[in-house]
Amino acid sequence: MTERFSPKVIPLVDLRAGAYSIPAAALMPASRMAASGLVSDALGRNLRDLRISVTDRCNFRCNYCMPKEIFDKDYAYLPHAALLSFEEIVRIARQFVAHGVQKIRLTGGEPLLRKNIERLIEQLAALRTLDGSPLDLTLTTNGALLARKAKALKAAGLQRVTVSLDGLNDAVFRSMNDVDFPVADVLDGIHAAQAAGLGPIKINMVVKRGTNDQEILPMVRHFKGSGMVLRFIEYMDVGATNGWRMHDVMPSAEVIQHIGSELSLVPLDPSIAGETAERWGFANASGEHDQAAGEIGVISSVTQAFCSSCNRARLSTEGQLYLCLFANQGYDLRSLVRSGATDEDMASAIGHIWSGRSDRYSELRGAMGADAGTGSRRVEMSYIGG
Ligand code: SAM
Ligand code: SF4
Ligand code: SF4
Image (cartoon, rainbow, N blue to C red; front, side, top):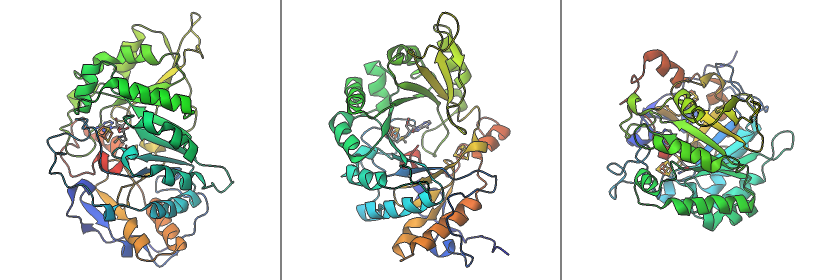
């Protein structure tokens, strides 16, 4: 009979990491679980996607993510010793791949601020899935350092990038990033990424009503026909510092309607099962998808939960494993790695943790009503990555 996995929970002092951490000792129940390339959680969702946050620091202060009032000069970022080393990240990632992970996304904070990130990319690019295929290896960035780094990232083995860009109007963009960073430099970064072959490039725009919704159409016109896919993300109630209100969310349905007032769109099928973005193609005169014009996407994290197909695990900068973006509890994989655990121990722990997963916050939020989850103690986006 399988031993029931019910680890002891201890409170964490540091609120950025959510309220609780499950200690390493509790992650090794007596019954062993070997990696088989396929592990399902309690709701039948297979582990496929791993996001790794490589730093909790950022050179932007987007007010929906790291508001200046909280993330000011006195904010205590993690000391270097607390961060997972590249060796530790790769060791942990290898166990995830053994359990069926096919895609790894590096994020942060701003991942390009992590010193020698190319060395980490080289090591992750060498990993192979059980059938011998390379991983889908990608990175999400605010683009500020991309012009400088694109070539080296490609040479290290990165396949593609997603760039966050919340508008084209320089004044709007400078006020969204709140560090007066010019939009032209991010556009240069995007061009450098294109030239380096880091494609297909995705551009992510978080839409905040009354702040940057006037940028939707200029962004669509700019990226239409560019080969890049622009995606609109609903402003989410992630973390506990951004003062989220449902009123500030512009539902994807409204975004599509707004774009449709100028350009004809046709719905497209998902490109892979469990895709989080809903795809829309630009239509030609006969109402069919115009491939050359391309497509856009909407990610409706608030108004249309996609928990039923969520196959994603998240590893924080200091090695806490989170099973949901809205989790208030992490699993301390760093202590496990540093306790001398073998690869088999780690694979077993990860397998047990994923098998017990039943998170579906967005579905529950939907059932509870709009502002229901605000104000609770939750992990910050800049700590866990998007
Ligand atoms: N710094 C990098 C960047 O901005 O691309 C990577 C980390 S950032 C946390 C990852 C993604 O999360 C970005 O696309 C960002 O726009 C998005 N994000 C952050 N806070 C968000 C929120 N409250 N709602 C929706 N998306 C958010
Ligand atoms: Fe930094 Fe990205 Fe958060 Fe903006 S969204 S503050 S760029 S981590
Ligand atoms: Fe996945 Fe949690 Fe988001 Fe649902 S709320 S889609 S379980 S991360």
